[in-house]
Length: 312
Image (cartoon, rainbow, N blue to C red; front, side, top):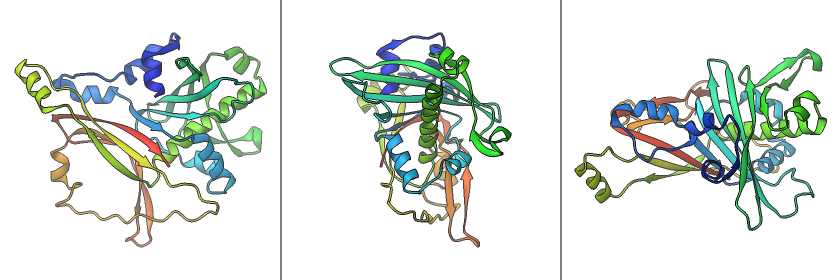
């Protein structure tokens, strides 16, 4: 995966790498007295196993979404997270020997309105390891990142500021048209990936645990427990040729019993809950609400870190 390749593989280093490393590097162990601090620092990971640009442009061509609609409603699933995907879209004919290219971004909420995005690009040629680098740092002054522009006749446009770029002179100083367009496409694709994971989906849940014998050995040596995490695989439905209204998901709530009851939640490890849309179909009128990302569970029981592999 790109995050691991960038952390531990061949990369072109920049002066900003340390800012990303502190959020992407997973601890092999943690102090149980500082579990909340550990969880606040770690970026949750969302890894698309499918080509995100292909899904985006297929859905746009099939009129399943519009760019304006997507950009106007995109929500952050976490205040700090990593998202990545593989693609060959837009690589052109001059990429002989290029096996694949990967794009990823560390995304952070800054204050109440702004969002910062560190964009990393990885390229892999045949019979060679992946080479990656931190290519851009961009900031959005508002979120969602689409505002009315008087320059464009009050039409809503995607707006962001380039703080750092490996090709800063070409992109920002000279404003080379194709270079600006290419960055705009990458940002659109990343935003679509963010949009996609907050939509209704089905998933499987896999708990990653250390062996009991390993745990007992650490306890005997008076060492803290190793980090335990869950890998949640999201499955996104294949785009359809004709637009259909997204079916609502029936949601029931009870204050007692079940995995979402206060009693059950209190006896879980401390963990992040991803921001998501929730549909209420048994209300009049039926409606959808946005659930903000938040923390749940008991820190004294430890923490759970989540990695999400997304496919359609």
